[in-house]
Image (tube, rainbow, N blue to C red; front, side):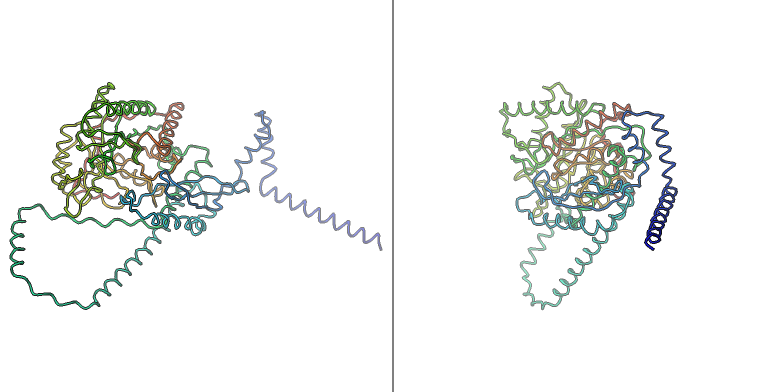
Length: 567
C-alpha cells in the first residue's frame, strides 16, 4: 500500500511537470520566444559586439510593449521670482517597471496687477493648489494607461477637461449675476429730488461745449478670467511631450517638429530678440512708455555671436551712463525682464543712448541691428482721465499717442516694431498708426492676457506665450494657422531651469523668439539651450539661415477690416 501511494504521488508530480512544460511551450510559441531568441543569437554572432549582454538587452527592449502612462504627480514649486507655480511629473510603465520620465512647469500670468505691491498672493496660491489637485486626481485618472507618444489624444483629453471646468465656472458666475440682479430689483427705490433747472442749464451748456471734444473714451474690456487650476493643463501637456521625446531618444524640438510636420530635413534657429533696457512703469525714472527696448540682430548670425555682441554693447551703454552728465541718467537697476531699468524722462533719451553706444562700438543702427519697443501701453492708462500716462505727470490721449509714435519712428527709423502701443479697445488708433507707419514699423500685439480674442486691425503679428491651459497641440495649431506672424516670448514668471521654450520655438519654425535680457538663470538657460540646438544642427549639417531682414519685422500685411481671422 505504501509503495502504491508513493507511486501515485510520483505519477501526479510527473503529470504536473508535464502540464507545466506543455503550458510553457504554448506560452513561448504564442509569444514567438524561440524565434526571437534564435534571431537575436544569429544577429549577435553576425555583429560580434564588444558588449554582448548590452546588445541582447537592446534587442529585446526594442520588442518590449509600448510605454503606458501609469500616473501623474503634481506638486508646488517656486518660479524665478520666488512665486508659487505648478510642476507636473509623468510616470510610465516601461519594461514592467514604473519610471519617472519627465516633469514640466509652464509660465503663469494673471495680468498686469500681478507685478504691483498690492497683488494678493493668496490668489496665486489658490490657482496652484487647484492645479496640483487636478493633476493628482482627475487628470491622473483620465490619462492613466494612455500612450505618452499620442500627444494629440492627450491634449484632446486635457482640453476637454478644461472646457468642462470652464463651463461649470461660467454657469456659477452667471447664476451669481442673476441672483445679484434679482436682489437689486427687489430693493425699493427712493423718490428722486426735484430737478435743479439751473444745474440742468449748466449741464446743457457743458454738453454744447463738449460737441467739439474728442470721441467718447471706449470702456475697457473686462479681463479674461484665468480659471483656477489651468496651470495643470499646460504643465501636463508639456511633460507628456518631453516624455515622448525621451522615449524616442530624440531632442524635444525634433519630437514636436515631427508632430507639427513630417520629420523636417532642415531647421533654422529663430532670431533671438534681446531686451537691452527698460524705462517702463516700474523703472526709477519718470518715463513709463518704454517698458522694453529690444535689440533685433541681423539675420545670419549665430546665437553665441549675438549674445557676445549684446553683452559688449550693454557694457558700453553702462559706461556711457556712468560717465554721462546728461540730465536724467542715474544708476540702473535690474528689472523683471532681465535688463537694466534706467531712469529717464523722455523716450528719446534711451534711444539716443543706444545709438551712441552702437556708434562707439562700431555698429550701424538700422543696418547691422534694429530695435523694437515694448510700450506696454495698456498698463499706462489713467481711466479717470481717459489718457495714457507716458511719463509721470505727462498724459496723452490715444490720438496724441499716435502723433507721438509717428514722430518717434520718423526720428529713429531703426525702430521697426512697436509692441502693444495702445489698449485693444483703441481700435481706431491701431489702424490709424499702422496706415501712417506702413512697412517701416510693425505693430505687434501681446496675446498673453487675451489669447482667444480676435486679432486687431493694423496688427502685423502676435507674441504668443506658453501659459496656463495652452497645450503643445494649441501652440502647433496657432503657429501653423498664422505662420510668419507669430513668435513666442517669455513672461516675468518663468520656471527656474526649464529651457523647453527654446525647443518649442525651433520646432515650430518661428522666425523670432523673445527671451528677455541677458541676466538670470531662467533666461540664460533658454539662451544656452538655443546655442546647443544650433551647434547640434550645424554638426549634423541640417542648419539653414533664413534670408530675411527687417523692416518689416513680418512680411504679412496688417489685418484689414474685411478679413476674418482669430488667434
